[in-house]
Length: 271
Image (cartoon, rainbow, N blue to C red):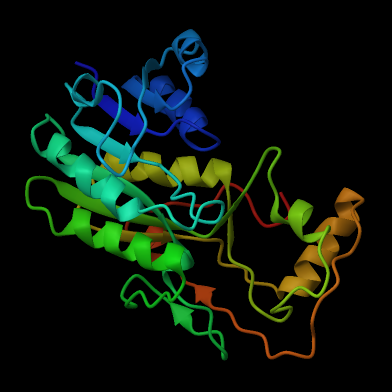
């Protein structure tokens, strides 16, 4: 009998992830906030639901979306850069009772390495490091992680991705348009879309629950040098940096992904 997975959020990462899981013979339910995208999901074999997480509770047929799935992958960006007033924690908090009453036994929460502050000296950050973000988005992600981890009705694995890049998406596109960019000497922490999908597949296949994983390439070139090279390759203007202010940053260690999941990265920073 095929395993069933529910993916909350089928955007840039969630959609190809769903397709990859279907290829591995999973039954996949996927959510979208757009009614127009339901047909697109259905055409690729994803059982689509229109669901919006709100601060008052999920809008849409969340019960049916979760029903029959053993695994729930929460892949919803907080969206706090565009709207700092959003209460992302409340959205997760009001989702939890529905998970508790469902067939879901395991939750994979897609988080971010932004739960760690950028500091002088570029500290090495492992899964054992205590999150210490001071930004609104970082603090809300920390609280959302804890909310899920502390719930005993299901097992939760936290997967913190470094900066994402892949088809039609690279931080260089945004940086090339800016000037006086901070932290030029800071280490780069990135991971390609294909490896994001690969790591998630490993976690679900090996059933590594109640864990915390960091996913970032082991290479950490300096920000100014790396993006200068990438922009040159892409034919974009070379970004302008602030070299006067002391750079702050961090190095995301992801040895656990390689040791525990036995995962080998498919791409590198120049892919």
